Length: 178
Length: 177
Image (tube, rainbow over all chains, first blue to last red):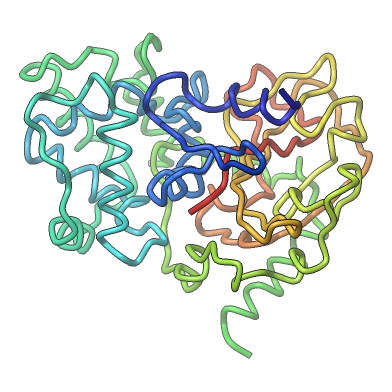
């Protein structure tokens, strides 16, 4: 195995989150459009496999799927500023990206029976983006509180990543520049 | 001259005169560390999505595939910093005594040998003083300062135990669609 091959194995998740096809010529992983969009626009901060812990960035792996538990939280994911304003004009492609994020990276956190996002739904929701700031963080705290109470989400979903010590509200607001 | 080109000229001038460890970089880091990002209209949105060979840039047309210690090596299309290949490390390995950041700047580069687009993660190695060798600043598809996660002037050491930048690697993630 060449040196680059070692690197791919190190950077790609071990599970099915990013099932890849290998190109015959060079043995390079070939990834789908949705996966490519995730890597290019999201993975720098959230991590190639959905986690960049202990970086102060929301961990997606085995966590983001909890947001599909109710309609408000489901809508919230699309209305997040960096999702709604993503440089992907086609809402069908953005739906594919978010379905990859939720169902592949979210893994075991996705509730039974959760339905994938549709292009029309994404187009409608991204037209009403949330604004960055303290109000958005308060909204997230409220939604995640509901998911913890009613959807068996772990208490540390309020934090950036699994196992992180609880962060004070003042610290969170400070990070958001509020 | 369009507002976009004026903005680009301003940003390029600013970038040339700004150290990666300057206050500007630290402000950028603060923005990226936040759970949400400020957003402004993105004029180059469509261009940013184009991974086709037809979108090949000047860098891609002149890139080479043999010497990874040179700035024009094809994988370095969007790198900003010292090449780890000149600093005791490799194209995807950090030099001894440094730590790879869990976060990275991501670029899409065209390999001139096969004309295809590949996703490259520029993973900074952190923990000791700036290597200072083989400094490169390539900006393919970047430069969107109002989307900090698409700005490679930021020190991508957040999440590492030290914010001290040493050098940058260029790890192959996969062939893009």
